[in-house]
Image 1 (cartoon, one colour):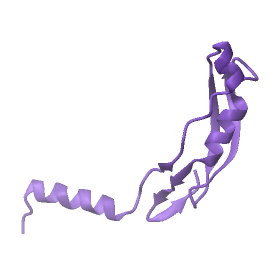
Image 2: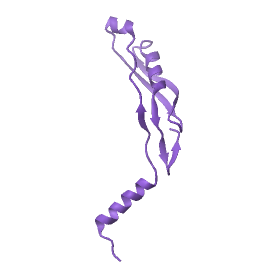
Image 3: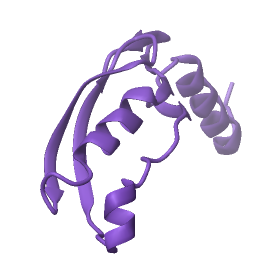
Image 4: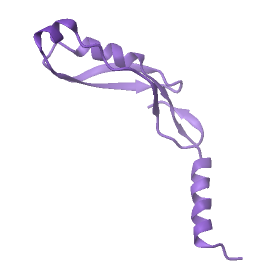
Length: 98
């Protein structure tokens, strides 16, 4: 029996979904609170952070990689990211730490 190409592609796509592989997705999270002193002084900047997400979707090990200007926004950024929650990544249907 020969399977039409479109049906075959559809079957492959469904099989991939059934495999249960999915990247992590942000479920909830707000931005950082702008430090009042920085706002009043018109200071702008940025913070780059790295963090881990466990199999329950909780953030841990938040660390500052880069910031400008130093010492202004880091604490607010770390606090915000620490409160984020994710739908964890899955591989073969099993939650994965990332």
